[in-house]
Every structure is written in structure tokens, then in C-alpha cells.
Image (cartoon, rainbow, N blue to C red):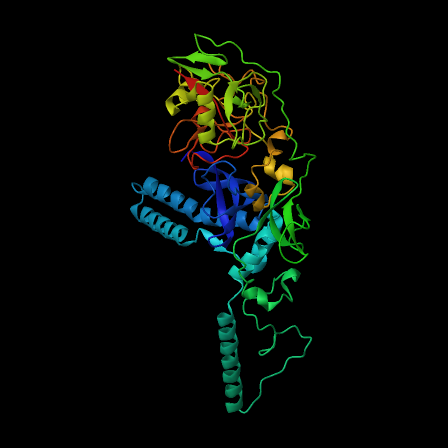
Length: 500
């Protein structure tokens, strides 16, 4: 572990198997010093995985409980380290004092291990965390079913409470007295009064009071969701009462009663998903270098596309027309082209990328070739050198494009990563070669950022990161995603070709 590092700590308000709240700290060794911000984190996803094709931590207001728990858990470790150090330094001077210090260090070490890493959530706190993350609409009912006590627990609580009341009454009768009754407004609880819900707590939020007990057993399982499409946007058939906020219903597209409508994302920007822009019309490949085909650069013993690939559709007569880079080319015959100033092709799988390279008389690059092209003859971490220079490449973005497009951070947006509008947002894709500093030693552009780039790895690998992230799966040229099959595609997946 680096002496100064940045990690999540202070895991509180956990719903096992679903999420917890944690805070990212600047840490000195194991001790959390400065809280940077809290997140709602899906269990099992905090430090791994491919960029944003999954639910990352959703930012929420700084959780004081999380910060306090991180410091509470760190203090015994700090005390143990200080005690052990003092014992070693004192051993030669006063062995008895040193023994006491080491014994104290051992006790603090035990305490550090005994403190649980995570603290469980009460229902009100779990719902509050979901509200802060904008996910209550999506997950609130599930969490209520997880955290509300079952009917058996409630019956047991009522039964045990009744036994306790009867025992107290019997004891009072045996002593010749009666149970004292408190005035109704005294603020003291009555022994046989109050809520029969053993799971409700004194800090329950108003939203929880008076809820129908049928929520405890959950809704009837209606089977697989019914899919639909409205105005070219994929959606799900839902009751209009559930299709709110950043989603909108469209009637007449779903089976069943009138209140079941096609629920689709509501775009937060002006974008027509049915429009088919062709921004690359009129562009042509530049001559190749070192006897390489047009649009390619000689790198060691092979040729590589100077720019991330765009596509041209091959028509029945053999003529070619530009293919819109915002649409997957399924069912169309397309060829790869390497164009300066083009919008590169996202929305493409490895299988489709390999076919497009083959139509151009080329092939996908091997992992070794791609790394050599990116790292140059000197083996740099970044195309331009050994040290990250943020902004030289299209390598980061403050807001995830799906969150910006749909106007929400709810988890459902990650099921809509095929929208052609994602790569048409401002500050998304850059035209190829437009960032002149993002070039390798041999003059190959945009190997870091802009789009992920498929390689020929039969297991499925894309490299280099994209315009949202170039860090999570490795820095710069070392960024590699291996989590997807060769048939996978979304807005972030692109490619370039190689040639012998």
C-alpha cells in the first residue's frame, strides 16, 4: 500500500448483498485523514470492473456516520502501532514499562479486529441513502422487503411482548398491587401500547408511517418485463404511476389496460434518436507511410491505422457511402476507414470490427501490436510519455454521459447505453486527430481515450480507455477491459485496424 493513498472507508448503512454507504478518504497508510466525498456503492463493485457499464458508486452528501465510523475503526490501529513502537523503543531502558506498552498494543490490535468493517442499515437510513442517490424510485420497494421484519418475526415479537406483560401483571398481583398507569401525556411508553411492528424504530421517517402492510410480502411476480419501443427509444411496459421523473410513458404500445404504457427514458437534451447524422461525408484517407496502405502508419514491422476507425457501407453495386458513427452496423456490409477529423465509430462489437477490417483488406491489431503502437519504441505508459498530462487526450469527463442524457443517476440508465445520442453530447467524442498532443512517437492518434479499441484477442479485450475514464483498468496504454464477450458493444466501443 502506498504511504499516501485514496480509498473508500467507513462502510455504514449496509443492506447486505445490495449496497452500503462509504466515504473516499485521502489516507496516510491505513489511517483515513481527509474525507473527499461519500458514495452509495453497489456491493462487490467498489474497486473493480469496466468503467461505467455497471453501477459505480453514486455520489451522495458527505455522510457524517461514515466519516465517524472510519475514524473510530482507525483509532485502535493507530493506538496499537504507537504502543508497539513505544514498547520497542523502551525495551532496553525499562522492560516492565515496555511489556505494559506492548500488552496495550495487543489489546488495541484485538479491538481493531473486533470492530466490524460494516454497520448494518435500519430501514429509514437505507431509504434516506437511496433518496440522496436518486435511487429510491428504483430500489425502495426491494429494500423495504429486505429490511422490514417478516410476519413470523412480528408475531413472535407480539407473542413475547404478551408473555412479558402477563408475567409482570402476575408478579404485581402476587405482591398485592397493580401495574401503575402513567398519564397519557407523560411521554412514558405504556407496557401494552405503541406499535405492534417490532421492526419500526423511533427515528422512522414520516414516509414510512402508515404504509400498507402488504409491502412486507412484496408484489406478485409478474414474470419477465414486457419490452417496447417508443419513438425509436427502447423501454418497458409499466404502470404509468411507476413511469415518473426522468422517464416518460407513451400510450398504445403495450398489451393490457390503458394504464400500462411504454416507459422510456426522457432525454435531458435536444436529440432525435431517429436522426441519422453523417458527419464524415466528404472525408478521404491520407496516403500511408512506410509503404503502408492509405490511412496507416508504419510501426516496427507492421502497419496501424493512424486514426480510430470510421465505417463506410458497401452497397450492392460495390459503391461506398459513409455510415453514421452513432449506429451499430448489424445487418450491413461495412468497411473500416482511417480518416482525419472524423467522428470515429462507436457502438461496434469485436466481431463487427474484425469484419470491417477484413473488408478493407486489413485485420484487427493483436494485443502486442496495439501496445507497441501506443507505448512507442521506449515503452511509455502514455502515448506521449511517462507522465500523465490530463487533457492532452480526450481522457476524462466530469459527468457520465448517460446521466447527462437522461437527467438522472438511477441505475436503469446503464441499460440504455446504445442510444445514438450519447456520443452526440457536448464534451463527448472528439474528431480523430483533433488533439494533436495525443499522438504516439510514430504519429498514431487517440490511442488513449476517445473510444475503447477492440483488439484481436479471442476472449474479448478492448484497450486504451475512453472519454470518460482512462484510469480504472490501468493507466493510459495499459488500460485493458476483459469483462465482455466479443459480441458486446455500447457507445464507448470502437477499434482501429492493423496490416502486415
